[in-house]
Amino acid sequence: MSKTVSGFSKKTKEEKIDWLVAQYLDGNSTLKNTLKKYWNVDASLQNLHDDFIENTLTNYYLPFGIAPNFKINGSIYAIPMVIEESSVVAAASNAAKFWKDRGGFKAEVLSTQKNGQVHFNFYGKEEAIQSYFKFIKPTLIEDIATLQKNMQKRGGGLVDIKLKDSTQKLKGYYQIHCTFETLDAMGANFINSCLEQFAKTFEAQAQHFEAFKKSNEFPEVVMSILSNYVPDCLVKAEVSCKVNELANNGMDGTTFAENFVRSIEIAKVEPHRAVTHNKGIMNGIDAVILATGNDFRAVEAGVHAYASRDGHYTSLTHAKVESDTFTFWIEIPLALGTVGGLTTLHPLVKVALEILQKPSAKELMQLVAVAGLAQNFAAVRSLVTTGIQKGHMKMHLMNILNQLEATETEKKQAVTHFKKHTISHSDVVNYISTLRN
Ligand code: MEV
Image (cartoon, protein in one colour):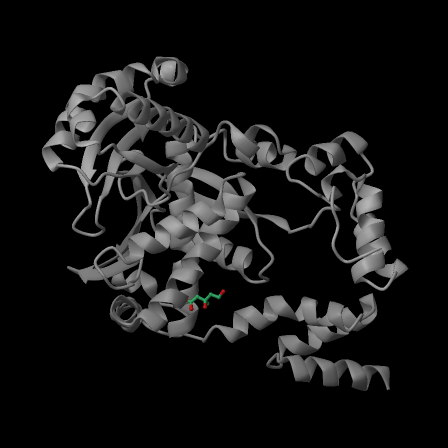
């Protein structure tokens, strides 16, 4: 056997594991058993997961938790979160409870358009490509009639197509910039299918266009793909209360509000802080995105591009105090789906969507934005009051104890001890070794 392999995807799962263990894991049977221990006993459930990707070997668990008590636009939600970081769900629950007693979260969808581009080269005369686009536009739209029939029936579909001259940025570079309404679907497949059809029609018909034939300069498509930058698919979430209602951890409301607003100002001007600040927001956002079977890579890429839209990377949240009222809000682009894709395949995603009362994509945008805002509130609140480590290490204690393979009795004793003592990794190690000696 060798470290390279051909026809790997055709092997059975067992054969793939055997090959891997022999070639990369020194035949270690413990590691092999670990891979197999995570197989689900329910064979049909396991098959479903095996088929999500190529070369599945096993499953990789992440905790699926719940953050209750979210009051959003007057209704109460329990928000499912999938995340491994110890303190995130606790922090979200805490922020939810805090704001439930101060009017709750308000959220609104500002826009819902997604977009994609056919990127092409054209080195001929500007007038020729302009007049070709004008000529071909109705045919482009006609040729996606079948593709968009169902989407149109539900009220969505193509919104507009435009020719965009990007030759100032890159010689000979043009785009057909397309906007879509995809309703409750994330719409990636729909958008990409439409774009590929546009590209086909666009290139094929160009062969018969007189001006191109005369100059022997034809447009050549480079690629057709949706964009994960969706600045016209925006949602806003907000909380507000009187400053004196913010008194916190021994800090009066005015001081807390001042420190809080200042921390946002810092994140606005200093990218080092902004990235960490926004990472805290994404702790909440990604956890809900994962639980609801959406694409967190797409959301991450789009959100961070939005955070840099003015040419420098900045905070995604904003805060102000006006007339004794503290207001804290977020505005982010989110292209989400509650139908299609994993939402109809993954049993736990179905449960998550049921917990959220079967939201539309617009409702899910609101819930996700709220989760991000809540997470940011919890993080910044800790940072400007007690510091982050107190809460974080409290939640992390159990991980350290598990690393040390503490018994149930040792865990109980450690939890009691560290209620009164600051937690650090070395202190926990020392405490357990003292117990054991
Ligand atoms: C840790 O996962 C997230 C924080 O660093 C966020 C922040 O600093 O605002 C606590």
